[in-house]
Image 1 (cartoon, rainbow, N blue to C red):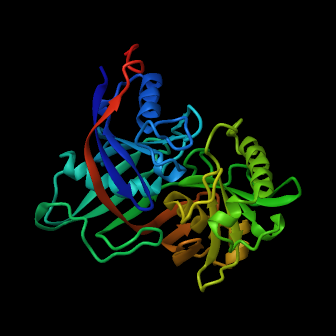
Image 2 (tube, rainbow, N blue to C red):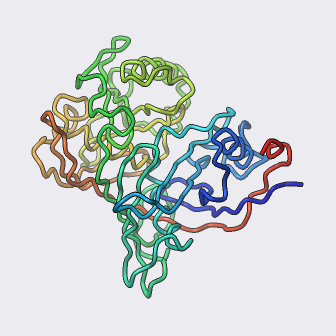
Length: 363
């Protein structure tokens, strides 16, 4: 017989996937990952035998538990389930899915709702980042209806305000993991930056692009993808991450000067396809890089490194994403005072996902 495991499908920002309570999954990591792979239907290009959406943006999982950490309400473990490989990557965070953690935690009874709005204090287990999520709770109930629109998502919804309180060195422990704002890999200048998400920032013009192309056009350029992947793998070694050939970290950002009045243009790769919009954690990293002296992003944006920087608008294929930035990243002791943005979320489906008998045979 198949095994039923309770889950809730949530949209968070421009991503979606199942949310599980940690208590409903096994503590054994290998078995847990096999369950997630089976639930999503990997490895298969359409994930036809699971509930995954057959793209990196819809093959994501959130695992939530009540936290025992001082000053924290819930722990959030993010899992990227690769579509075409039998692999679960828990190195990165996902800021879009993060947008749904607060509403989920309240509706699952992990955090009591307040009148008007409720602040959920979240610890991201992957990167050790602390984030405050402010959720609309009129009459003490989560609402998803509202007038806030975000690029990459149709319609409008209630806002979820996110403030990253600690995100420097999310995986590597360093703002600049190589110790330098600029490295040269295969003749291309890059910046390796780690704020909320480790990224390799590449000037678009140095790989023959404008940086304003659409996601589909970039995905169709097989030679470009291969070249950037070669750079990414070498950057991973330089960043102290070892062999990243089977990891989605670090991500790639193709950088260019803004074309529509923003601060900078970014094409975010996940890393094997261009995001149709932009990842939240990647946006925090790009914005912070704009305020880090000497980086590719700072050079292209012209943003001053004096705090507070204010609103940093990052142009992406579907529009733009804005980060309210107040950081001091030019000295020996980098500090984030504020890196805030708005997402939306929606509860899509609730019930049980069915896990095939053979997966649970060793449970």
